[in-house]
Length: 371
Image (cartoon, rainbow, N blue to C red):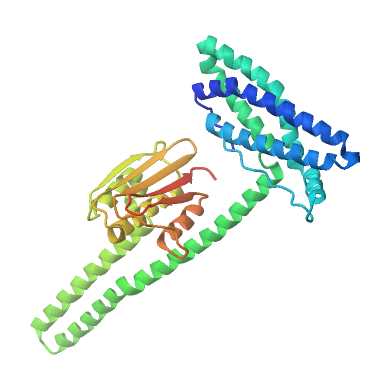
C-alpha cells in the first residue's frame, strides 16, 4: 500500500522525538540479545533470548502505532510462526526460525543510526521552515515505507492475503448478483407480470362483451386494462431505475442522487463531489447503496431527516449516509446491510455501519476507483 505524505508538523515531531526511544530500544535489545547469545551454551541464554525477542516485539509494536499516529501509515502485524509444542524451548525455536523476528531485529539495528539522521533533519526543519515544509514530510514518507517493509507482512504474506481477499470478494460478488437476480425475478412476477395478466384478462372479457354488443361494459373493461397497463409500465420503470437509472448514465451521480432523494418521504440533504467522474461500476454501486440505505431509513429507522455525502480523492469514492433515527442497525448475515456489503465487495469496496442505540446511524462505503 502506498504511503501518503504526512502533515508537516507531525513529520517534524516524529523526526525529533523518535531518537530517544530508538536509542533506548537499541541499547536494551542489543545488550539483551548479545547476552542471550553468549550464554546459550549454558541454557540460561534461552530465556534471556526470549526476553530479548519479547522486548523487540514490544518495541516494533510501539513503532507501528507511533508511525500510524504521527505519519498516518498503517502497518499490519506480520504473521508469526507458532511454537511446535509447549515449553520455553519450543517458543525459542519458533522465534528463532521466524523470518519476522530477523526482519524486526534488522529494523532495530538500522533504526538508531537512521534516527540520528532524522533527528538532525528535524532540528534543521525547526530552524529552517522551508526545509521543514518541503523536506520533512518526504523524509516521513520514506521512513513509513521503510518501516512497512521491515515491520509489516512480507511480500508473500501480502500476496496471499490479497489473493484471499479477492477470492472472498468474488464469492460475495457472485452471491450479490444471484440475490439481485432473484429480486428482479420476484419483482417481475409479483408486480408487472400480474398487471399484464390482468390487462390480458380485461381485454379478453372486453372482446366477449364486444361480441355481445355491450359498449358500456366494453368501455369499462378497456379502461381497467388501460389503468393496469399504466401501472405495469410504472413498475417496470421503477424496476429499471433500481438496476441502472438512465439519469445516472447521462448526468452522473449528483443528478441521479438528487432525483432519488426527491422521491423520499423525509427531507434529505445531498452533497456530491466526485470530479473527475468515477467509473460506471463505482457509480452504479454508489447509487445502489444510497438507494437501499435510504429505503431502510424511511421504513425502519424512525428518522425524520437524513443526509447523503459522496466525495472522491485520487483512489477512493467515499459514501456516507447519516440519519437521526433510533439506531441499533447492524450487519446481520442475510440482512439488507450485509447485502450492501456484498455489493460493495464486488468492486473491492468496504462497507461499515456505526449505529449506537438512540442514533445517529452512519453507513459508510469506501469504494476504490481502481481495482
